[in-house]
Every structure is written in structure tokens, then in C-alpha cells.
Amino acid sequence: MRYSASKYRRRVVAVVVVVASLLLATGCRDSRHIPMKDGRPQITIMVGGLEKVIYLPAMLTERLGYFADADIDVQLLGEQSGATAETALLAGDVQGVVGFYDHTIDLQAKEQCIQSVVQLADVPGEVQLVSAQDAASITSPADFRGKNLGVTSLGSSTDFITQALAGQEGMSTEDYTRVKVGAGQTFIAGMNHDGIDAGMTTDPTVAQMVNSGEARVLLDMRTEEGTRAALGGLYPAASLYMGCAMIDAHPEIVGKLASAFVRTLGWIKAHTPEQIAEKMPAQYAGGDPALYVQSIRDSIGMFNGDGVMKAEGARNVLDILGKYSKNVQPVRDRIDLSKTYTTRFVEQAARAPQ
Image 1 (cartoon, rainbow, N blue to C red):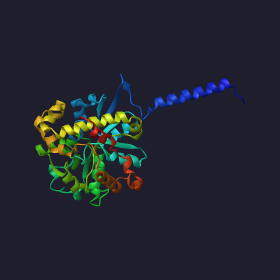
Image 2: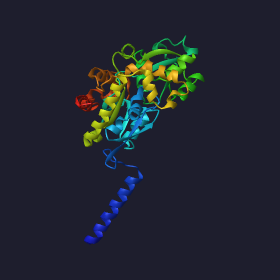
Image 3: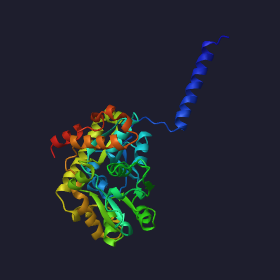
Image 4: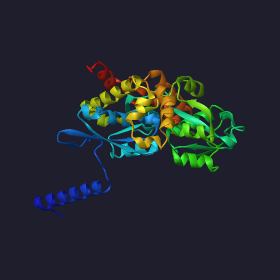
């Protein structure tokens, strides 16, 4: 059976139209695409908890006007789970994520290339809290067996770190129960209503629960000393990470983002917790400005000031995930850390005249 050239072309066009329609229907997006408006890049960044102090530089950069100074328009979206944020990035729904660096390693294990372009902190900024009623029976991770332990979500960074803490005591996830409790009020509700015995969270939730007497600090990873004691070394955490294809396609725009964040890190080092709190949205204080200032004071030392990843820290994250992450462990020897972060943009920002 033969077709004329015109019929053949019509059939090809029809197939192309159908395929294009299917791609649109399934939400397929170009992972390198950055929308433009009036000549300015339109960047959407998902933050794993806008009100969390560990991610404070994202909103602070906006409030200081540094995104505008860099000639880019940035929309910040809040999402309590880093695992959900990475899904949005891979789907092309956002151009960047402010979340934990360890996701870049976990995703490489799944054959996805994501890079930290600004490393905001060398430590997690996380605290393992134990409920006041369980404080006598849980005095270290060795007591995790048989307990309900709160994490932001399964596959989140709090989940990774919890597995590492339990793993150091010879336990696997079969020995305790991981409970998804999110952050903020859902975490507090979980601990106060016997949903969890202990859990990992950040300020301002930490300050609120400790001050009220509802919980006690079991492990404090807001400092380098506390992090090294808990995890055997640095654990670089809060970062701006983006897809490798996006970075390669738009280095100038990525450089502008990095410059804005580095300016903010410098500003943080030069100002007091009170001055920082004044710049943040009033609702972040939750009606208690003094508590919010305390939260910033307790956590602010985690930010490194220059945005540069420390190679020692990256190696320690891989070592931990290689032991305790079911995704990374089978392929840890194939993980290329050089593809999980880059320092070139923050180094360029440091050299640029201020």
C-alpha cells in the first residue's frame, strides 16, 4: 500500500500534534527554561519552610532588595518538606530550591544532576528534641529503639540525619518508627499529643517548645561543635541548589542569584539578631518578637558568611548517606561529589566590587 507525499506529510503533522498535546497534558517542561518579563529573568525558588530560621537568608535577601539590585525578579514559595521541593525542581515547576545539600547526593544516586550553587551553612541547624515526658527514658540516640521519631517527611534531610544517628547505634529503620510530622505547629502537635517521643526540628519551633517546657534538647546541631559530636564532622545543609542543565544554560543569571545571596550572608555577619528580625516579615515572629529574636540568636552562627562549600563537609555528607541511605548506599562509590556543588559563582561574587 502506497501513500502520496502529501498524505505522508499530513500523517507526520498529525503525529507531531498528538505528541505535543500529550507533552503539554503531562506537564513536561524544559528544565533549562527561565521566563522573562520586560527583559528581567523571572525566577521561582521553593524554600523548605520560609519561616524556618535555617532558611532565613532567602526571605532576607528579598527584604534587603538584593534580588532587585541584581536585576532579577524572584518569587519565593514555601514548602515544609525538602523532598517535595526537590520534586518540584525536577518537574520544572521551579528554577531553584533553598534546601539541604544532601538532596544533591541522593538525587545523583537516582541519576539526576543537581548542584548547590550557594552553600549557606556548614551545619544542619537542626535540633533533636525529646518530649518532656520522655526525657528521662531518651537520653541519647542509643535509646531510639522502639520509639516514634518525628521527621519532616520520609526522604527528607531530617529523615537522613535521623537514620544516621540511629545507625551509629547499630539500628536500622526497622528498629524505630519514623513519623511524618512536618514542622512548626504540626510538629508541636505531634509531640504534645503522643504522636512522637522525639523528633528533629529547627528554630523558632525549638525555642518555643524549650521555653514552654514541652521539650528538651537532646542533640544540638546548630553549632559546629554540636554537629561534629553528633555526626562525626561538618554536615553542610541549607543551600541554593539548581538543576545542572539550568546552571549550564544560564550561568549569568545563576551568577546574579549567587551574588545576591552572598551579599545577604555578609549582611547577616555584620548585624545583630534584633536588626535581622526587624527586616523579616512580622508574622514570622508568631506574636512573640522576643522569642523570634532568641531563635535567630541561637541559630545564626550556622551561616558561613561567604557561601563556599567546604570539601570536608561534602565528604562527610557522602560518608553518612553512603552508610545509611538506601538510595546512596548501593552506588556510593560512583557518586561524583564535584557534580553535587560548585563554588565558581560565589567565588565570582567575592571578587566583584561591592
